Length: 430
Ligand code: GLU
Ligand code: MG
Image 1 (tube, rainbow, N blue to C red):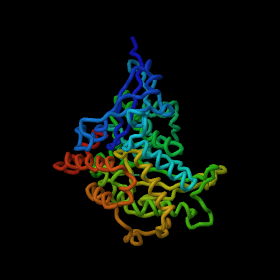
Image 2: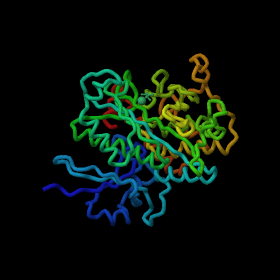
Image 3: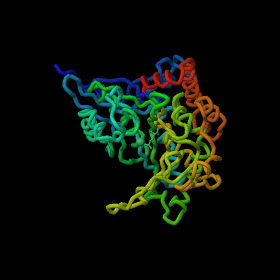
Image 4: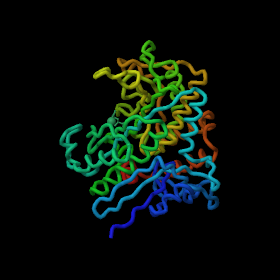
C-alpha cells in the first residue's frame, strides 16, 4: 500500500535549517487555518543540533501558521511517498506575530521600505552547491552536466512544477560544483524560494543516492559555495528604479543611497548573511566571493556588484539592471538576509550617508587596496554586529540575543577543529 501523503509545516531558523512538523494531508485544511504547535526555544537550535543558551527556556508556546501560497508538492517516486512542504510564520498562540519570527522580519522590512519610499524589492538567490563523490570532470563541462543525470533534468522539472521558476542549471567551476539560478521574484517570494530550494535539491539528491552540500566551503583549498542575492527596486507601477542611464555606472540616485546603506552596515550584516565559522574561509580575496566592502561595476570580488545588462534580442537594460550582494551563503536564513539588506538599503535612502564610490570595471587591485575589509572571522562579525546600534535596533532583543548565542555555540563546537575538519563538519550539516 502506498503510504498517505504528508504535509510538512516548516520554518527556517538561525542556522538556515528547515525545521517543522508534519501532519496527514487529510488534516491540511484545518492546519492551514489553525497552524501547528511550535516552541520558542527551537530558535536556539544550533546547526549541529544541541540547543544554545537562550532567553526562552522551557516555557512558552507558538503556532506555525502556514502561508498556503508557499506550498510545494513533491510527487511520489517509486516507493518514496509524495510530500508537500508549506512555509509558516511563527506566531503567538492568538495568531499575532511573534517578535522573533525571521519570515515576519523580512515581510515587515519590505513593508517599511514600501511605506517610506514607495519602492518594491525584487530579488533572486543564486545557489552554488556540490554533488559529492562524483568522478572528476572539468569545470562548466557537458561531461559534468551529464554526470549527474537523470538527477539534474528531473530536478529542473521538479523546480518548475513546484513554481520556483528555474532559470539556469549549470556545472560550476569548483570540483563537483553546480549552480541553480531562479527567475527574479517579489522579495518575500524570492526568500521563500531560497528556503525551499535547498530542501528540494537535498531531497531529490537523496532519491538518487547522491549527497549534496551547500556548505560555504567543503575544503579550505576548494571553491566556495555562495548564495548571491540579486536585488532590484521598482516603483509602485512596476517601473525600474535602480537604473538611470545618465548616472555614473547607470546607478540611480536611489540606487546609490540604497547601496550606501548596505556598505555602511556591511560588517554587522555579515553576522547574519555569512553566519558560520567557515563562511569566513570563503570570504577571502581572489575567490570571487567578496574580497572587501566595496561597490563595483561587474567585478566578482565586490561585496555589491553592479551586474551586466544586455540589449541582445530586444533586452531592456533598465529591467535587467540589478545589484548582487555576494557575501552570503547557505548557512544564512534567507528571510533575515533579505530583511536586513532591505533595512540597510532603507536606512541609506532615508539617511544622509556620503555618496558611495562606484569602482569601474577597470579598477586594479592596487586601487582597491584601501577599501574596508570584511570581518576576518565570525567572532569579529558578531562583535561588529553588537557594535552597530543601527542594525541591532532593527532586531527584537530576544532575536538578537538568540542569534549571537547560537553562533557562539557553533564557534565553540568547532573550536578544536582545524580548517579542514571544520569545513568537513559543515559540509556534512549543510
Ligand atoms: N563560487 C564563488 C563564491 O563563492 C562565486 C563564483 C561566481 O561568481 O559564480 O561566491
Ligand atoms: Mg556561480
